[in-house]
Image 1: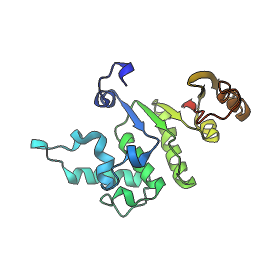
Image 2 (image 1 turned 60 degrees about the vertical axis):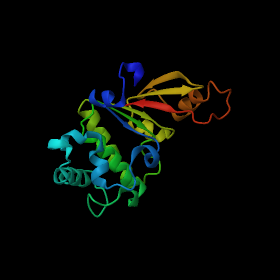
Image 3 (image 1 turned 90 degrees about the horizontal axis):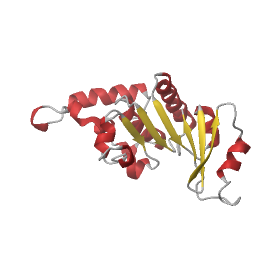
Image 4 (image 1 turned 120 degrees about the vertical axis):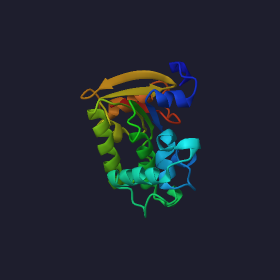
Length: 197
């Protein structure tokens, strides 16, 4: 974020940027805390009353709305998020940023470890964001996912951006060739195509 002129993550968030991290368990969620807490964590000011008290009833209502919207399978907003399945945990991460109505959302391996049904729900939300004019940047090693989601795919290899493909221009073979172009044909640790939606 510093390269963009922001001095802190808070400034980036205030500017409309959101981040769905690759590792939801260590970087994206507070596992012992509730679905409510994890959903509203990115915008606590919206739920703060005088003297800094949190309005838990408002938090609970908002979290419940996103539980319904994203079809999160849980007993309710007070269930600890660590007890949910991986797909439902990821939906809670999405809910945190979707409710902020971000201008741009960065997603790093957004559906890793997520079942097919949960993927479909998350893809529908991403499509709705794109249709509303939001910018989505997806980093993924799942080529099928990128080809289904993206308008453009940029391929990085050896730490460099080596190719950009527009929809209709790419093939799986072409993407793989670009991904390994800077590694001498050997498999890199994570040649990551980056997609703009």
